[in-house]
Length: 187
Image (cartoon, rainbow, N blue to C red; front, side, top):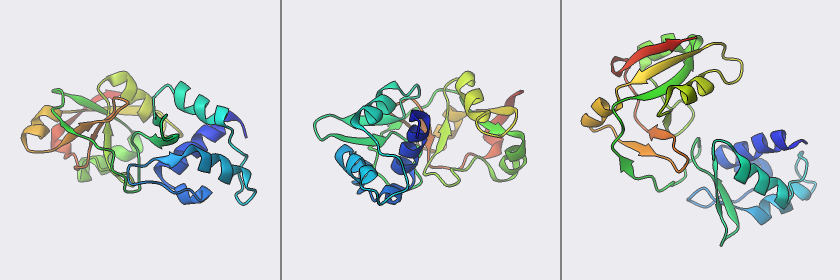
């Protein structure tokens, strides 16, 4: 398995399915690096073995800084994007006036009716800049991105809590009503 596939698999393990490799995750979302190494090398699971160098390269070269590494405990976790319950120690923050959300033409009608929802994740993910939102909105097979500008500070005034993850992604557990958004960019 090439490093890109291992990176995607590590993201899956740390955000959604630690049981796919028989991993024990603590309440903070951390998993022992040694357990990842041992379990991926055990032959019980249908994956190529991870090496310590693989994990370090994935964690420390990730351009989005998706991971945190606890050197003392030799543990790793995802910084956000979880669909499982973890305590990330997020502290409420006052957001800037506007934040951005990248989505697809397919999703926009749903968003107009239901708002921006976390869907299968614990939080709605928002970007502080348009370029990042474009990258998110154009991932996968979504087609051309649509960028929504969210009046984050106004929402905050209505007691919606916002958090800033370790890697600079703005998060909220709340549904963002469409009334607080505007279509900012269509590719």
